[in-house]
Every structure is written in C-alpha cells, then in structure tokens.
Length: 395
Image (cartoon, rainbow, N blue to C red; front, top):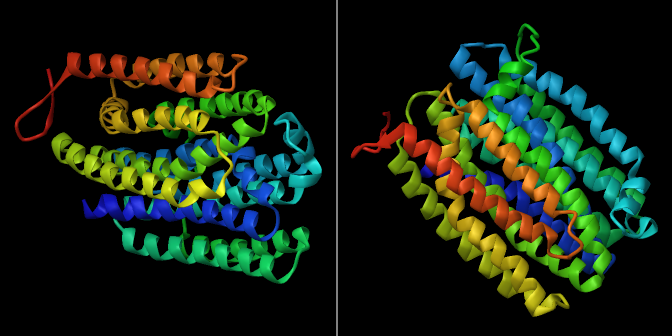
C-alpha cells in the first residue's frame, strides 16, 4: 500500500499543481485563463501515448525481455519524436484554438505554455517511470515535488509581479526545462541505442489504443460541446478540474499492477484491496475540491451534476477493470483480444463525440465503460480463477 500511495502521490502532485496554477492564473490575471485546462485537455492524451510507448512499454521490455538498453533507448527516441510533435502543435496553436471554438487572442500565450509544458512533463515522466520500475519511489517523489513547486512558484510569482503574458510564459518554461534537463541527465549512463518499438507497443497496446481514441473523443467532443455556450464550458472545465487529479492518481493502480505482473509478484486480492483504499481517499478529495471551488464558479447545478455523475460511476468500476485488463495484457495470450475490445469500446466513444449534444462525451464515456467492463470480465473469468491466496491461476 505504501508503494501505491507514493506513486499516486506523485501522480497527484503532477496533476494537481498545474490545476492549481490555472485556478490562480484565473484569479490573478484573467478569470478566463482557467479554461485553458479544458482547451488543451485533449493534448494530454498525446502525452499519455508517448509515455506508454517510450516509458512504460520500454520498462516492461527491460523486465520481461531482459533488455537492459530498452529504457534509455525508449527515453531518447521519445524525447526526439515528442519534440517534433509538441513543437508542431505550439507553432500551429491558432488553428487548434479556433478548432476548439475559443478566442485565439485571449488564450494564445497560455495555450502555447500548456503545450510546451506538457512536452517538458513528458520528458520528466520518462524519468519517473524508470524510477518506479527500479523501486525508487522516494527519489521520484522528491523530483516530482521539486519540479511542481518550482513551476508553480515561478509562474504565479511572475504573474503577481508583471502582467506581460509572453514574458511570464517564457521564463517559467525556461526554468522548468533546465531542472528537467538536470534530472534527466542524472539518469543516463552508457547504453546501446536500439529501436524497440514493436515490443513496447505490444506491452502497452491497450493504453495506446485507449489514449489515441481519448484524444479523438475529447478533441471532437469538446469542440462540439463548447459550441453550446458558456454554461457548458464552465461546467466541463469545473468537473475536469475536480476529477482530473483523481484520475491521474488512480492510474497508480495500473502502474503498480504492471510492475508486479512483469516481475511475477502479482496478488489480485492485495491489489484490489489497496486500490479501493486509494479510491476512498480520492473520492473524498473530489468532494472536498467541489466544496471549496463551487462558490467561485457560476455553475448550472443540473448540467454540472450530470457531468460529475458520469465521472463518479466510472471511478467506482475502474479498479476492478484495470487490474483484470493489466493481467490479460501481459499474459502473452490475450493482448490482441483486449486491444480489439479497447478499439471497439473506444470507437463507441469517438462516434458518440459527434452527437449534437453538449453531453456527447459523457454519453460516450458511459457506453464505453459498460461494454469494456462486461467483455473484460467475461474474458478474464473464462480463462483464469483467483485462488484463496489471491493468486491468478489459469484454468
């Protein structure tokens, strides 16, 4: 449980500090700036795809295939390709903002900041994943806390002192990039560069498919929903602010499960028990954030409740789903089946995102969740049983 809490704490800091930054920027500079979080939300899934391929997949390959060069090779390739992708988005930020039906002149500087910050955080996440697999969660916690306090301190400090958005953005990005560069260099050693993409993709195919379709869902879904006016923009942004940190923290369940499965140390009952203890904490923090932030937003209660209810239902089933799909993914027999199911369920979400309703993403989320939960449970229990000790045994 301690390991799960350490990793989830890291994920929480990684997610919550940027959220707090957007809230503070809205208070200090312009209350519209909090909406940048929703504006660039789809791009987070490009970030997640890169982390899956070049970090998680590479670390699993090191453990399962005994490939000592996999991790640093993955990091190096991810840094190069990530630079090309994220800088291209930053250069074309006007087209992106206008596609999302938002005001370019209002959001341009901090939209660029958000995109480049995601690239810097991507590099940092490569280092974090490496440390997790090496059992160095305490070092990872120290690095994570330092980066986010530094980012928050410089960004908000400058915002209080000066009002030039371009200068604030440039200095903040420079400072966190230098720190990330120092941390990354510390983790490098002599290695033989090998392109190991097929193995990495095999081990992370479900996450890659999921995040690819999440990107499409939220890109088109948010663009669609934001056409319906300010009430929906504010409600979407509010629900994202109070649940996104919890979703990121909940991903620690997946991280710990993959580490133990790849090392042959997985106990389903122990992981399930710890997962729901973590979920209790995260649900409490969700409602605490709602209680604190609700009065600062002009929210339509019914609209906000509808978006929030979908998130809560998904929270409740996520641990059981994640543990089973992680095991199936790494069992060497079922990766094609679980990936196909993820394609189908994610396809449902994408199709729903085109519905001409502001609730298109919520409808897609519920339909996808039901399909995945049913199919993964059938596939798992047809092939495995969980014995009294909590071990997963093949039938």
